[in-house]
Image (cartoon, rainbow, N blue to C red; front, side, top):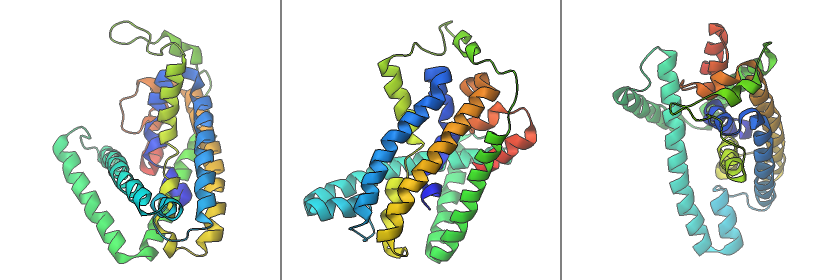
Length: 270
């Protein structure tokens, strides 16, 4: 559940934006983001030892600081989660449309797909945790499989230096000079790919021994995912860094391959 909650649209959609900011330093930026994510993950893991109620950050802050702080965290969590789920759901719909050869930029198509997705998720939630577990397991296998295949497939002749020669429509360098501001902006973009662990404990009351399993699962998942992310970004930049930076496709990672079968595997995994 932790791996599936973290590996989502972030890693399939964000590498291009990060690479466009920092060029060949993209993989290193993801490692830096993993450090920040690990600090927060350890904090959540520690809190989950003592509070086994559902609610994650809301339950932890309420237990530690009282109802007022708990309510504040709960409200901000609802707002931030609504925005995040909106972004992710739109990414899912656009990716699905592209799989079936439909126009993923058409507002009508995206709206119908979005409503359909919400209806499917509603049914899954109403049926209960057994179906949710099955869906989660299949989803996790699909994502890790797609990323794993990408990491294992190498291609010769990449030119990372070519990134510095890319120009925008105005003739300016597409990759800006590496500054503190650029570093922070890229770090925030990369960190988005690690978010999700903070919601894992939202349903801790439905888990087996959450006070023992969650403190182990969250840090372990962060370590596994950090290795996968570094590998996927490093290999993708090695295969075709220009495609990574310039692609307009919904699933940026698929753009680095010329083989259509590999593209399909990655898009379906996404």
